[in-house]
Length: 157
Image (cartoon, rainbow, N blue to C red; front, side, top):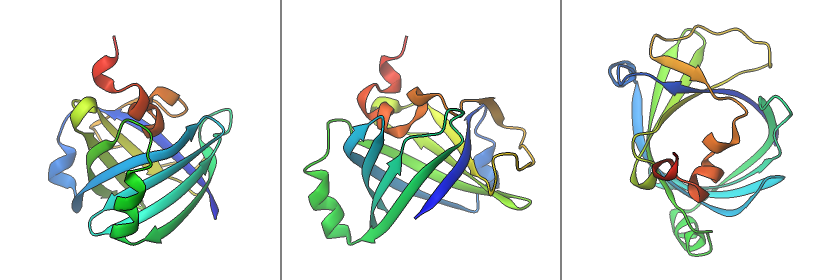
């Protein structure tokens, strides 16, 4: 159990792909996508994860997060219980100084959306911004995966 502190940004180009040290497919669904809490099931590589996230702080930077590794079979079984709107994405990891940026390139109903996140140790921690980092969308709930599953990018005006 921990408090997750992260900032989210739109990505302006695919230059991050050349800088990535890792990339892998993620599939995730939501057992609960209530604004006060979300319960997510995720398949990443050959492992499953069950994650509970609390409500974000007013500035959108921090929230409670609990995650437990589960088997691939358990994750696949839990997908049967998920709300409508499964998220499929490729995640890239880019290390820059002391931070790792996780960049998600979405597929399916969210195709065309690319979001970068950086986890921090404190809300006021400074970090170097790569050239491909665009507009900050921290705290904008329409960019939360739980909301993208309900109102996908293809349906935005």
